[in-house]
Image (cartoon, rainbow, N blue to C red; front, top):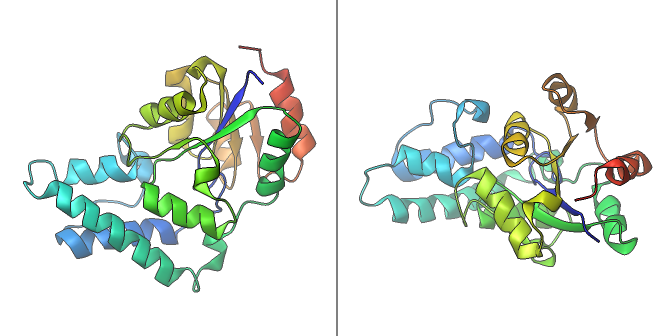
Length: 222
């Protein structure tokens, strides 16, 4: 296999909607007493869990301790909210058999690169029936910039970035795929928006696995 499919998590594997962002903002407020200016991550220059906090706490001598406290509080809040918003902690339709098929049929290798913290990503993926440790992965707990997260996940999987196809659901995924020069397959609730942004291949979910696999086979070989 000379192709590596790197999957984002929120909106791409886990059908994350509104509660995740609210829990994140609440965790920051509880630990620091400060509020985020917005929950619209498209407005942040570096939209990852660690980068947003580090920008917020720049110059604070207790920043590292507070970041760790926020991580713990964030997961605690997610655990509390899961029974109230179960849909936010379920996998996109077809994603689990799709990833399994990629591996079993030798279509491509698989890794996960997420802008979440490691702990919150592991929790949300576990809710979806996915063990993060079963895949090469990188998170914003490793490095705050999304482009570096993707590159690190590829390196840990034993692939150059030139071998990556990126599955993602958000406008910042479009931006980073262009920065890295890798093809992107748009997936999830924002698929129409991704198409407006110029993503050629977009799907609401993984229900039509054959169609997505045809796209993978059509990509230029690295």
